[in-house]
Length: 154
Image (cartoon, rainbow, N blue to C red; front, side):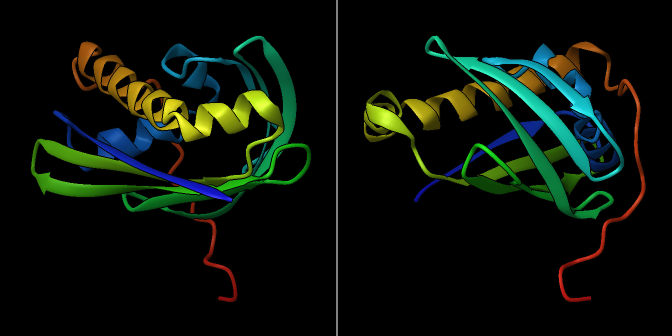
């Protein structure tokens, strides 16, 4: 299992950054290699990706979602990955968005990409594109879901 942790500071309030992140179907607008995400219900999504010519589809489940704080997920089939994105208020108009992702590279290409730091750079690039996306909209999110998914065991 490999772990990647990256962050970006965005020039929007924490509520705006969080609200935009809950719009999973917009991820292809700033995540390289993500061609489609369909939200099936409040906690389940179907992903379609193509990275380095490798097409994949998998389902993921939101395991924890606390407004303005965090969203955690894990893949339920296909991919072996899990992660959390956290939102840290820096001041009234600035937020640090941090992604930590655990994944199991599959095959020679993914293993080599992981060892060369390509996955880290991809996630860092996705976060910078998220920053550009939300800031270019004047800090206005495309939507929001303010519901809560409880912490495991609670």
